[in-house]
Length: 580
Ligand code: ATP
Ligand code: MG
Image 1: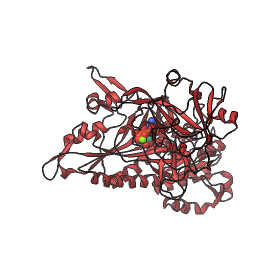
Image 2: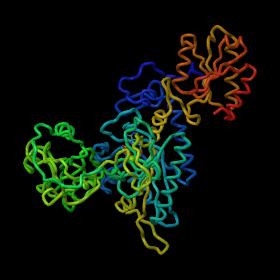
Image 3: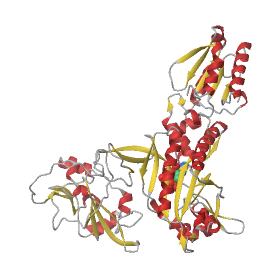
Image 4: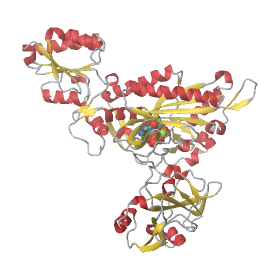
């Protein structure tokens, strides 16, 4: 491709709304353009990268025996009513009516549509297991679209759905998908970790997320230094290293703490450590059916610890989604504002995190305005109903498998695999006959990769102050030939043209920067770095006069001078992948 005839839409200025490196670089390198919030056009250069990522995903899915299909983005409400998600999904699901006043939505995911397909097409164990996938547009009206294509409203997902006669078969395909995802992200050159995940409200049991490690990641992932334990923050468990405690219990007494309402202020006021405090949080409770009961549930955590909302929302007595009690409700029930609440039997039920169990002579709210207890201890008066892990693990915690300590890193979720069980197949009555002619509800797995997000994640891991540094196999072009002062030198034009033809003939994806004198050599160099093409040859009158051509590998500091007569051989070696 000749740059003079290409939409090379690089820009110098960093867009003001772009916070992350990948968002900034995707705009600056001319890979994407914003149409509206969370909606992006892929420009020619960006689309080349996206296609390559897509192809890696497709090849590995095909290798794993999955079959590609393509389902509509527009989905009829009837299917969503059958699974109940028409009601339970929030505004993320974009609903609309057609000209006949019938309800439709834009697919944020395709469980309903695929299960409908399979219940019509598959009816025997002989056709199972089956794994169907597509690489296609999704729409989610995200609450907070940001970071460009990283969290967009319209994005490309590879979504696969597998169907099985039994759990054993589902387990097998799940393992194959786990391995396939590892192969995909390895081929894409990403530093990633699979972690155990919460299966959330999509339903089901076993689930893993694949995270690309990056400081800009929205998620926290946890792994042990020695063992194999890895989980996302929502799920992770760990043990706090024990702190020395006093052996004799003192008698509890009240102390006036004024306007010290936060743990931090309290610690300053009393000159104590947060580890010596019990923090009380109050949330809404639920009845046996999971409906909001109007009762208050107390949660006790050590003062330096943070509440894990996902774990908490799963507790039997806690209403989900988690809802903190209003200040007025707390005041009416407990007799003080939230800043002074502590363990109290006035709540309908209480859960204590293990972090508070061993505390002796601790500080906690006294359920009395501007007052705390000092030297409180767990006893008949200061008590809890049940112990439950409601804490976010911290760096340095002991791993649950006992092997080493936990590290916490930030990650970008690029893939997610789930065992759905029969959640959708039961609702949509997707059954198949087994060997004895008995009708069985199929088991399902689902497997997603955020293909467009992968491109951004890859840039997060592969860039420097000059721009993107593409891994060889997804770079939009492998080689750029930069012409310098071609308008002054016939030789520059001929030599660069020869190399360009040679590279093309060898199947190298090559960009010839033949833009005229209005584009200075400096801009050409800067652009080649910005768009991150792995190999660069510079053809200038001066170097040709010296009998050399300059070569630079993107990401490496040093330039190399190749003798003119060796350039053809060098280009051939690029084609053979010897310089990658
Ligand atoms: P997240 O927690 O990031 O919102 P999710 O758990 O809702 O994602 P899944 O339903 O698991 O997403 O979708 C599968 C994959 O699709 C995710 O792992 C992610 O890579 C990608 N994805 C999800 N939402 C978006 C989005 N808004 N923009 C780009 N990619 C997305
Ligand atoms: Mg997910």
